[in-house]
Amino acid sequence: MERTTEFYTVKRGDTLSKIAVMHRVTLDQILEWNPQITNPDIIRPGQRIRVAPEMHGEYEPFPGADFFQSSVTSPVIEAMGYRLIEEGCSEYAGGPDSQWSEADRKSYSNWQHKLGFEGRDADGTPGRKSWERLRVPAVYE
Image (cartoon, rainbow, N blue to C red; front, top):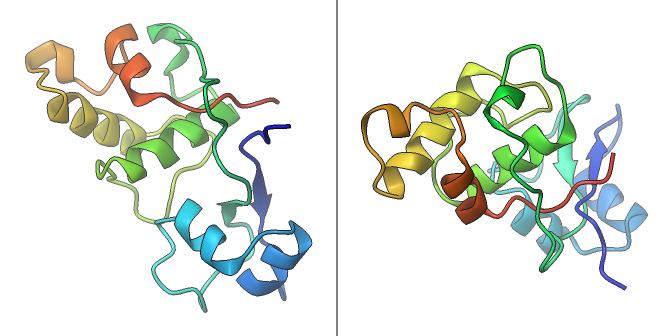
């Protein structure tokens, strides 16, 4: 059975080691899945971290350009943000969350430039071609 990408919201008193034990994974896996964590001794309440690997072979379909608005909140946006971090395109101060933001737009623009897109094709609004190449793991709400 393949696992879906899962996230955990840090609570007061949590440590990465405790979170790893709760989710039956290793600390090294938590760190691998969360490249935004640069010091494993520093996490904060409210921070969301990935606690399961990406699914292999199942990706989010392109939701359409109209999906990417500041009024939209979805775990798909957060999963996209983690993929952008993995691709070295991050403009996030502390990590992505589920609401579309300027940091998401800037990070996605970096991804589009990395793919060779220019001008309006690299404005930070996801298009079908760049989305499919990013391979955002399927998220079950």
